[in-house]
Length: 249
Image 1 (cartoon, one colour):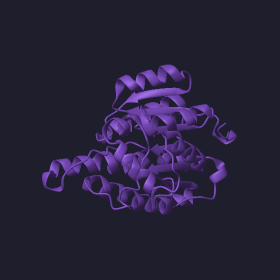
Image 2: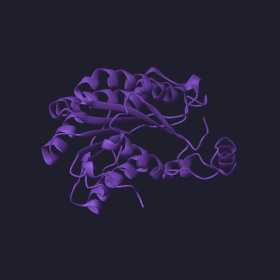
Image 3: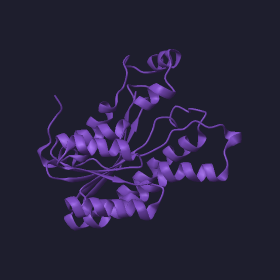
């Protein structure tokens, strides 16, 4: 039974990359709290299905997050439907593997756009709402990949390490307005994508060898922490980088 945070009821939440994987679990967790959730994602089929399943209190807005005007328009659409934004979860990312010698300038810029750039501009877009209400919570999804020195995706690990710098800067700038900004860093979470593309019997042995906990980590493990971090129970927590990796790091 998940914890219930009564202060989250009727809050307006925006979750980027909310149509699948960890993002979908975060959307479901907030919706279960009675929050109104805006789901931003490029996957129109999954986003529409999730909205239809959740029903009232859920709104899917198709959005390419690397298109900043489109991102701002999507946030405006959520605001018009549900009211001022109280909570922002910058979840969207792409962990595509890539070889260093094959990375082009355009590829590098594209990875930064999807993994980092949209987090700043989404935070910028919700700041006026949160300033007006005198409170708010932003959670940026990072990664432990750069902490453990994972190879094979330098643009991803570089962008994810930068999430921590962004989080700490925004926490300092937004704090005087009562706005909390934190980062949550997942370990190797067994999403559908990970299981289809990257997880094999051998890699799973590696995971268990490195984790203190000898079990699969699932999207709900991240969603529970994110919801807590956005609740009033975490009202004194900001400027933090919270790792959820089963004790790997």
